[in-house]
Length: 293
Image 1: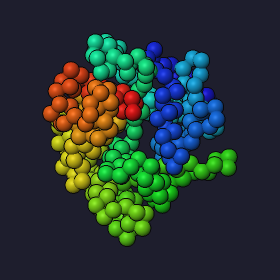
Image 2: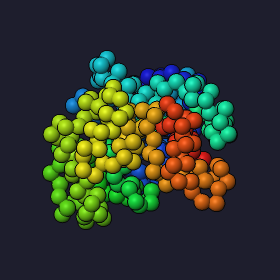
Image 3: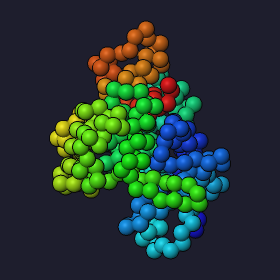
């Protein structure tokens, strides 16, 4: 079964592929030589492997399984639209950015770059915690071990496709389960805390949907281990709040240092001042600055 998903004019598939290829240890999707992307997702109570590829009329969404209801198909299309951030209108952002000396060259060079989403809020939060205070490749190592140990999997045509572990499974884990994977004790505790918040119903994607940024952040930061950076990152990646951005992010500061030709990274106050120019589009400004690195 193949479905074609139309694309907005400001979209570049190659940038999506570049982001998804950040690490050879990535375990939640695979990318073929033709840049088709295969990923296992949950559709209702089933696990389905989808393939997303470039097509002259948009993105093609394919699955070998044909036993789907119309609602199932709509669910898969919705997932892809969310994953690739196809519903954001970037025209206002580009209009703002072209008048800014920092962003103007970036939006010209990276036109069509989108915020690749983590549609699963739980995955988004855990990934943010795993990445705290370590380099990106070791964060991917931790994720790989975590997913292989506790995630579900499906075998298809000689390949294994994994799903991110679900909260109910993770909530029952202890340090004795996670420390052997090289989780720090702190990461172990925070991971389980987040899972328990989902299992208890205190946090869910549905509960945060549509809330103002400040309220959504407050609810996430009520979980021990979720600070301002983690909350902003998850809200940016999962809900694509355009005004969410990780102010304290070292990569963001390095990108500004590079773009401004500074000898040292700008302080938080200077970053705040710069970002006043991007009000309402802080998340996209952040993603374009990250890309510049």
